[in-house]
Image 1 (cartoon, rainbow, N blue to C red):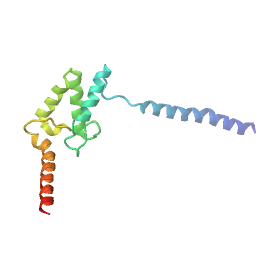
Image 2: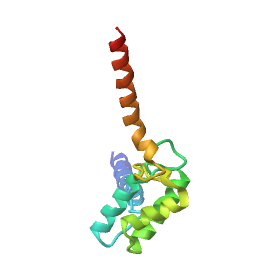
Image 3: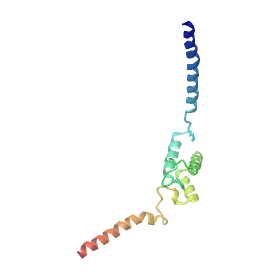
Image 4: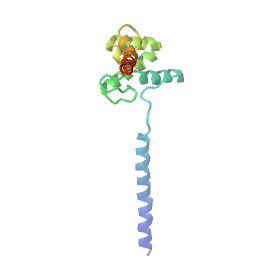
Length: 139
């Protein structure tokens, strides 16, 4: 009986600490570290806001904050570096537009090149009302 009791005590004294250490070591590696550490909260919020406004050019209508594409990782790193270098939001967007074109912005700015994009829905509605009015007038 004592030998059997010693077997269980030995098992508990050896097995449970090993299991505890195994889970403890694994949990220390599971701690998520921030890949883009900022010294100020304002910069972190700017970075988050910018990455949600910039399109991943290889994904279908997805921002770089949500994309796992390698190019999105590179763009996030570039935005991080520009934010850390105290560039303004407009300077960062201008840099990306110069390099990738207006397509990089999820909400393109209104200018001569994007006027058709912004005005086409209005033109379509006006044209639709014109033809609808004409059809009703003919009847």
